[in-house]
Image (tube, rainbow, N blue to C red):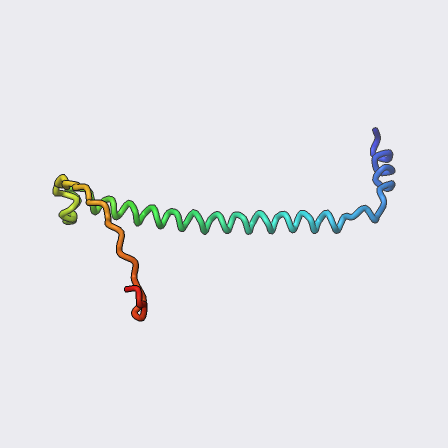
Length: 102
């Protein structure tokens, strides 16, 4: 193919081929990608902040970190005796105050 034949084929493309619509579609797609990336960046920052807070709490609970752990974390749990409860007895039905049968 020679250059003149290629240029002749370019002239056969109609001018109403929707060029502006294609450009608009690309712009909309680009905006959607940028918005998606912004939302993901915000989520990542929030997750990183939460992870840092959890790591700080974990460091405070570990022995040798300088912080005083809570007494419940250092003392072993004592066994608790569980005794079965007696079955509940049904309550007597309440009678109205003016009931002659009572």
